[in-house]
Image (cartoon, rainbow, N blue to C red; front, side, top):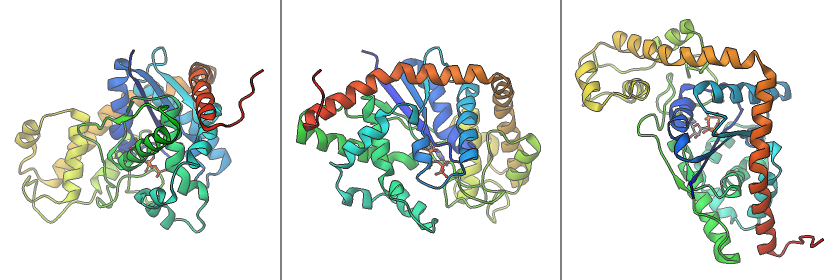
Length: 330
Ligand code: AQP
């Protein structure tokens, strides 16, 4: 049987080059080796307050970016999480077998809750919903950036706990990290990961930013006090710029060293900016064509949800049976 791959992105802001290099580009590369499902996880996005009109728009924008980046809807399923009710239903069933102590250890919860005035319980339960997304489809492989590794480990722990309590039910998911671009850091502050919800103009390059803005953001990126690129002593800002270039170009380490060693930071930044622009431009062009035909996009999302729903329903039915929950016989 062809192994199944599943991953998702929250419609919680503008997709940035971290999301692209850490997730989307990797999905495009591997999609045809698997039975692939890619979700826009809107139920995850609302774990932090979203303005309803902006959320509605972002869901479609991100779906269009999936297509524009090269997800092939003839092969891969693209769907919105909330349109398959099994995600929310399985999340509750799994919540009941997940010890709170496991969730207490999640570093993303600590980071995200620290930035909120009032923290909803959904933010705490976020990793259980992510486990439900994965286990609902009995996914074998989950390609995520390094930042999501802890959540993926938790999904495996939950699956294992469920299997040991109620008998073998869930496939154990494995991860697939991109070789480079696994963790793109903020351009203004390379000690934090590039994030959709981070504020500040110099923080991220969004996938839909125009060339002028991309140049401006990258030229302002934080570097260090060295006069030029030194692979031995470089700080995290320079390492981040080089990692972005390498992830886009797919150059080898030897090529990177030969080309960039000793280069002044102004020139390095120019080259990172031009490489980024050249890779994003074709995606932006396809994006403009896709959003010009909203009927097409709605069709892709509807077909995607319809195709995966039977698998989701079957898993929820099995889990309920295993747990002894009422399942009608007629
Ligand atoms: N900086 C990053 N570098 C590499 N990969 C990244 N990803 C996110 N940021 C980086 C990967 O993108 C996928 C989708 O992430 P998400 O939207 O589900 O949630 P996130 O990781 O919380 O992403 P953001 O951008 O930081 O969004 P907000 O600010 O809304 O929380 C995942 O595969 C993730 O690894």
